[in-house]
Amino acid sequence: MKLLRVFPMIAVVLALGLVAVPAMAQAPVHIVQTGCDTLSVNPPLVHVTFGVINLGPIPVCSIHLIPIPSGSSPPDSCRIIQCSNAPGWHCDLTPDGGALWTIDPAQQVGCIMTGQKHEPFDVVLDPLFCCYQVLYDDGGGNIFFTDVVCFECQKPVAAKNMTWGQLKSIYH
Image (tube, rainbow, N blue to C red; front, side, top):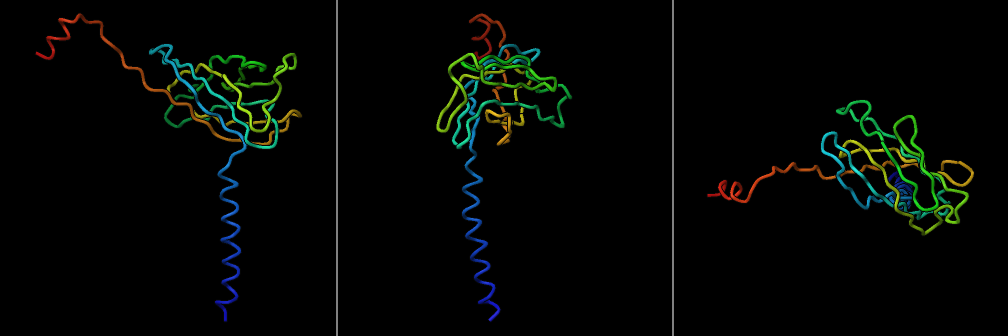
């Protein structure tokens, strides 16, 4: 008898879980890293390019990247050193080492609407791996979604300047 009362509650909880998981798995906005170029080895500077995809119903009109401190890195690591103005957007560096992109009202591009991807956004940063809290807001300045993005670049390998004869002698 008790089993018959408990079973409907379990079924309801499972059904709600099946509905909630796909909704949480589908983030309305994504940052997708599209490239990484090493600018220098010492200090390690990299140029990262990315795109922003809006899959949700709210237009994306500004993007905030806020560095997430890492336990093993110095406090000033993961600072964005430079950011560029994507077409129709304007970028400013922020005092916390992050960056803020806003739409440029003088341009015709406007916000990133539902189903659109906008690129290229880019940053220059110093470590080869950095994570940022991302805040997205609508045209009224209201933050409607937060996320975390990590940019990762392959570690550059130093090369020695050698002649073919010196290289060949290593293997003979």
